[in-house]
Image (cartoon, rainbow, N blue to C red; front, top):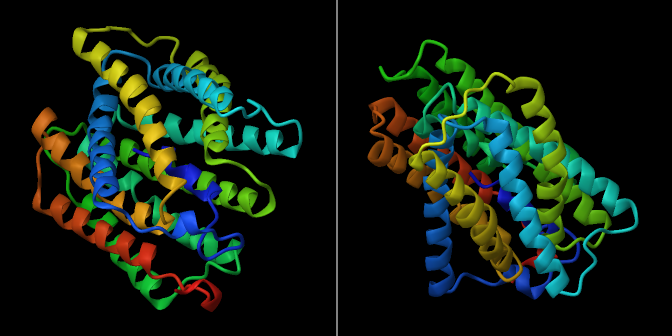
Length: 324
């Protein structure tokens, strides 16, 4: 998954105030290739997260992962000669972002104990749908258009299609995981909307937003682990260890930095549309790596959700002053 992408809201939105040339640049072939690689890594990451929950407490995994990544971003901020923490109201908002981010990851990791990776990645990447609905009521410059409404309807049909299928390998209580994945997408959307509102009022760099999400999520995630995961039997096999290393080093560190570089140079809408490759790669990874069943309804649901997200991403009105 890529709640990592929440930092895109910290970059001036083309539909909002403060639009700059960097946020309007189209993707170069090299950038498109790099972004495709990032989406592939994120798709595989859902499978790695599923593997890690089979031997390590979910919330504890997320907390430790974010702690290591936050340490790396401290180094990045120092290299940029930026203060690690702000000394004004931006710090308070950073704490709120971290809390929302923590619940996002808590539901993601915990939900993977009940359902499989293929279903999870589809539900999680309904995030743009919930963002579009929330933005319509919160921001005057980001209203629903007829294309976005059609996209919402199509995506909802896709969600229903995924709910309609149940592969034999899923346990009877698989629906708990499905609901948790929807909750994950909702908290991800809430985080994005909060960051968007914050960026309209304050100057906040994307790297600071990423850092605040990571560092302030750690205490809550570790606290949730202490409350709900006391009796969890830890069995760190070589495969579980590799999955933990992948999540921490490849995803929470390297891919975060690449994504940060992207959002400071390219149009946010282009990145959002491109990130739709992630659920496609995630479903493929679940089938290839985990041997999960690829049902016809799952394929239909994936196609409908992707089509709906695309319509939502490209269907917004662009004010005349920003048109080129």
